Image (cartoon, rainbow, N blue to C red; front, side, top):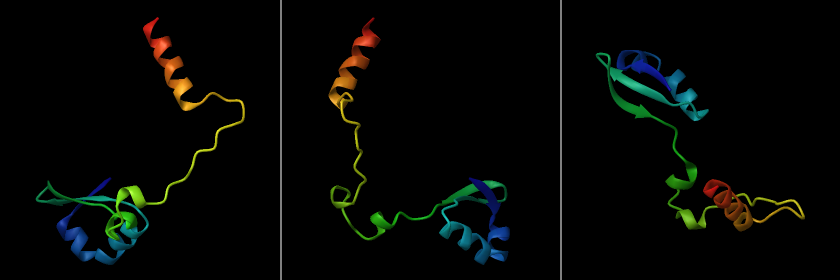
Length: 81
């Protein structure tokens, strides 16, 4: 994250708002002391949709590959050795 002063932000607000819309975040400083984090909002959070109803991408596994539970069991056995 880039740190910018309040003065810089107020003089070039349009430029920084465009950067926020593109997904970039900033730390806002007043007298060289951080006072705020400016981060873009998550549209799923701002719409009021609960987490369990938000869309998600499914993970496709290759045929014949081990399942998630088999992977966990294998990794635990490797750690115990």
